[in-house]
Length: 104
Ligand SMILES: [Zn+2]
Image (cartoon, rainbow, N blue to C red; front, side, top):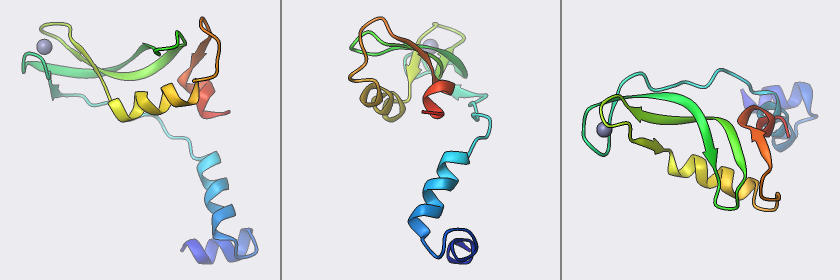
């Protein structure tokens, strides 16, 4: 399928087709409805919240698992690691949304 679509839209260039596909891919974030808290083991549900990076950049709309029992929040370390990397050179105090970061 990749090569067929590449022939039709990017003169056979699969890298260019992938670049365009990734740029235009937008679906709602799938939040985990029911998981277990890593702290107390009770039920936790994922919601969108504000994440603050080590260099003081605030990112709204980041999925986090919130425990209904103890209130513990746990972040997807690979996700927030990527976000940290993407805003590394932004000044402290910058406010941005995950949505905005997806359209950069
Ligand atoms: Zn908990």
